[in-house]
Image 1 (cartoon, rainbow, N blue to C red):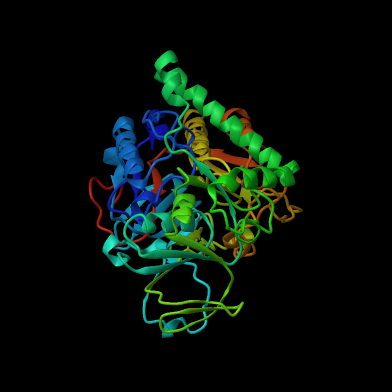
Image 2 (cartoon, rainbow, N blue to C red; image 1 turned 90 degrees about the horizontal axis):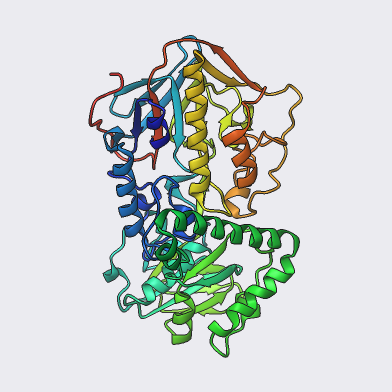
Length: 489
């Protein structure tokens, strides 16, 4: 919205949530916070100047509200608005978007910022006899909890990713009798001091603006070095992480069993542990780790494959991941038509990290997995403003990406190897070589999206009346009731 408004476009942002925030509005599990530094995670055009390096959901939502007000786009939001269909007509050079209440929006361009996973359905493996369990079973993606739910209770959190790493100490510190993290396989965890923000001392000397940009560059450089080392020297990084973790663990803790992953660093996400709180709880005995698999559930117990058991369980939290949109980059609960034909992801290729072959006047944003998500979102949004501004100035009506007839699908070489990607790569829009992919390199994207000429694969049509921009953002769920002026009705 910010970049498009700067270019003079009219913007309408449809969001099924009741307010700004996306993931931070929708997901409310205990302790939810950022797992990347906030200087990198914030927008370049509205700087994060708060003291903490990591932030919880409430702070992030406050920041986003401030950013929206600063950008002057509060009036563009249509909250509690669920999109039902999006349809593009090449004859009219126009998108038609319909909400589930029958409100109709018409727009020359469509920008999709609905993320990459389904908000309405979470991923939970099939656990044998879980229906016999007499306690409560929750998934953090669909849980709006209260501390009273786990106070003085024995809790089992199933999972070993960032969600499990966050929920487990949060419940242990807020009244749970004991929390056991049950993991099938370990992950890489690194303790990070929440308040250790380089920005704070630098800003006192050089001022806010210079300090922000210097800190952002520094944090990006550190991330790039670590990710490069993970790629070329994974054994060295593995050893470094284990040595850094060792003094944080209890004396009798078996790190070779519980924190010795079977994959290389950054093949899957590396979890940041704010202030090392998980390790503190581990030393205090309020948290324990079990590395095993579920054989079956019983009334108040979990029987494990090894023959061991976890007894007297009151609450089970299945932090077992989420489901990728199978129709990525479109949410699966939206009907998408291109010239009357349903969108088939397997008939299209990603292009230049933010476009799709043979889907005209469309841009989507999907952030980085190894770097801060917002770095990519900012680059793509600026690219949309540059491309669509160019079309307006040059009197061009439509842009359609045409793929070569001999383009072959390839597996993305720089993607994470985590479960939610593996489960869906054969269903989503196809990846190709070179520019026909969603890049995970900020260097590549910065050149292609900010500076490079528009590619020869992009076919432009002649001038027509430039209409409104329609941006789709946030979780696509909930009842829709349009507020504010309609783009078209």
